[in-house]
Length: 574
View (tube, rainbow, N blue to C red):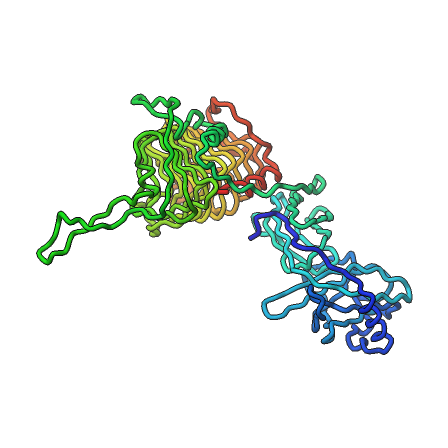
């Protein structure tokens, strides 16, 4: 999948060569191109009055024999029922069309083995005119779109070409195998017919929002997400990172701070530890234990230069990585306090048994990808990718990708507070984030969590499941999940604002139902929703959150298509 919303690679090459044009004219005069004609009927026309002859060439100028060619009116719109007929050029790439006067789009395609190339030529024919041209083929391209769904689902068509696409339930669509060039794209819904001309330069990224039938189509550009920069032991880069913290985790210092016995965090001078190996434990011989056969026993020791060695250092530590790679944890990595694990400038993938905090504080996880674990069975013994529990506090998870896990990818529970998760991506699991445990296990009224600018996609249950405590969720994007985006249950207080929910059910207010499907009233939560964009409609169907609003300063963006796409492309490890 392309990372951009719309991208066209390359341009149409329409090059007229005097020599080749003369050759084409001579062949046409001799009647040698007539075998490639379409019997004088093109795109529903009648007896032709004008003629066009083409020679099709590959990018290197060699003839593109047996290329497929079709010609449609410039304003043609596919109805999705049938494809327009193709004709074929001869071995030398020559082809002739006859048509009534008018404006046409000629599409050419050539396939040799696994290589395909194409082009589009826009032609205007006058009465009794003859046009002769040479067309060079270029790399095929694709249009990829993400239309935020509204009350109707649009049909997407490329004007002048036989392309008809219905977006999926999330509003996503792809139109591939397009010849290079610039195209007018048409969006049709049940209320009105809209179209917009997309003028692509190579490398352009365009966003099209046609979800609101009461307003004009909006076309705008978004920058490609910037790759993260390796901080290279520069403490000013660590300070710049801290300046981006919002929400409950404000006050977290990571490697630039130290936590005292009362849990207070103050500034301190940390050390830098560079991870130089993807190894976790090494198996070594223990010569102090030798059996009767003279064979020494073995034991596992922490590998020098490993992530585990850096993470277990005493005192505040800024953990950086010498190289990209997969760091497979052979046992849970249990962190205590005052660490920044910083994967910026590298592709750092954490696999294996995951990371746990236990009565921990002052931790930062930056630009990491948590991928498929060692345990893949769907049971509660499977460790989370990242588990924040037992009174852990002041923890910031930023720009991380949670790529795959059996059940829950990140949990915050058992009285943990002062936690912010921002600009992260959760996919391919049952639930993205578990906040607290059901009330019949433990009541957790004091836990606090901020979730902002995160992307939840392809989850079989919820994006966020809140049991008790205070949850502030803003500017998140929820797409493609089978249950509610947020479950606010077990007396949880949820302030939910300026999110985009591209799913049928935005919020659920209970965690259990009886045998008849009736919600169990003791499992209800309290949600206050403001300024959200909902696929399903009215956001007033949920309860009040008993006056809960966070007591920190923050800035929530408007929940529109622009913000949704910005979250989609900029969330996760960069």
